[in-house]
Image (cartoon, rainbow, N blue to C red; front, side, top):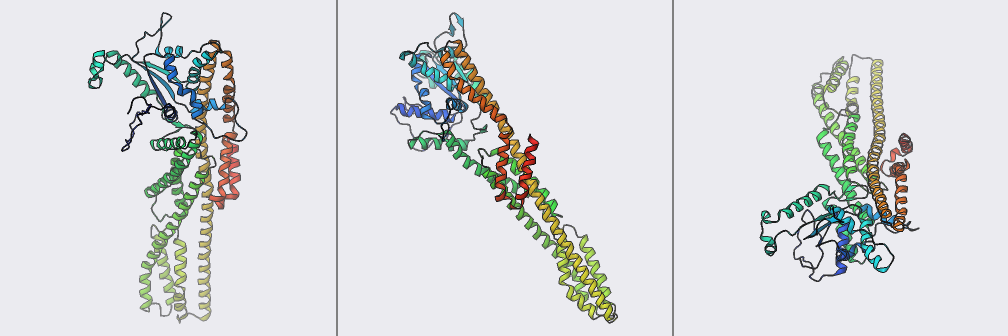
Amino acid sequence: VWAGTLEIWGLIPLPTLPRASVSPSGDGKNDTWIFALAVLLSSTLVYNSLGTINQQAMDQLHYVTELTERIKVKVAREGGRQEGEDSAEFVRFFPAFVWAVRDFTLQLELDGWEITEDEYLENALKLKPGSSQRAQLYNLPRECIRQFFPGRKCFVFVQPASRRDLARLEELQEAELEPEFREQVARFCHHVWETSKPKTIPGGHVVTGAMLGNLAVTYVDAIRSGAVPCMESAVLALAQIENSAAVGEAVAAYEEQLGLRVVLPTESVQELLELHAQCEREALRRFMARVFKDDDRRFQGELMHRLEEQKQELCHQNELASLDRCTAALLELWDELEDRICQGVYSVPRGYQRFLDDRQRVVERYWQVLGKGVKAEEVLQEFLQSKEAVAQSILQTDEALTEKEKEMAAERARAEAAEREQQVVQQKEAELQQKLEDQERSYQENLRQLETKLEDERKKLLEEQGKMLDQKLKEQEALLTEGFREEAGSLENQIRHLQQQNEEIQKPSWIQSALGVLMDVVPFVLPGFVGKATGVVTNFIRRLL
């Protein structure tokens, strides 16, 4: 790395790219962009300078005065934005600021009183009264730091070693460094490690390593194209990637849970639907933990659709497994009866009644077979129907029966077959009703988990808003105390805007509208449930009031 250029340092080292290097030519414009990237990508920004915090150090931090030109928080919309909105939004997403002063030689005193490092920084950030150009130039970087980084911390470090040892600093063991320097470094590291929060994006969603990489690429691509990096655009682009992955992860979790819980065939459709519900609940939980900025519920709708398809395929596989099991059981049980038919056991007087008795024993033994599944009734009905021609043949050759008795026996056989068929129809109707009820349950579960997620997001957002509001009020009070009434007044719009946002977030409609959007995707994912969706959402929202 060449001297004269800014660099971005991370607590966790990033992979080194082959043949990558930093240009040896210090470029102020590039340094400004690097500073902007550091602000965009970090949760704690450490700025280090040499000696003391004086005007020269402030002048070297001119990058902070250009942040509004280098970073755009939101996409420009028709109608523009109210004054103060942009500044308030900047603070929401900017990192905590730590100023590290190296080779510090002064005494931490002010007017004869001992002060802390933080008080030293705050004193250095005090504004100079007056409206002259000189006063404005003096105040500008200080105003920007106070406005954009309300959470500030300062650490000072003495020289790490004696003048004689500085030339071989990299060769020194830690024990050879100045004790005071080691103590200062320990306090600094403890602060960074203990107070630095994970990088988050709107809604309090924690940025993973992969997400941070995608954000960096998006910002750098914007800079290379000559555009100003827009945080909202980058987050929306990232949301498309992450939310698509969230759907995939949720479906994989569903399939994993199926493998652990489900053994086909199940005894009933209801049992299968209950297992599906358990797997779906876990899949939704995984999805909700990862998804963000899915304002149109497109990705949640996609997940609902895919899980509904999974359920239908699961039901189909369950039926096939049951069909195979039942058919195999009947064929095995029928073998003995088939042998008796071939041997002419029933081709004797009274043979038909003997056949009916033996067939009934086959049916009774069939119902004793375990694990037949949902097709047990239907397979039996179809199997007996397929053997009805044999039964009628035995009936007609039974010489012990009169024609009238044969006719009555045939009529009873038709009635029994019709009754079995009606039972199959009723079972299918009941199963269809269970599946429709399961769609309602699924929709309710989606609403419930979405509501929980929205409540959590609202809580985090209100905490974030409250922290910002407290910082703004504190800064306003400090400006009034220092006698800068005009500057304090300029914060009023930002404070008012934050208060209005808090009021909107706390309204029931903030969650109700999001739940209502989910209803709009129902026709595309649960077409059989469209008629009930409105009533379900209405009842769900009424409960929230």
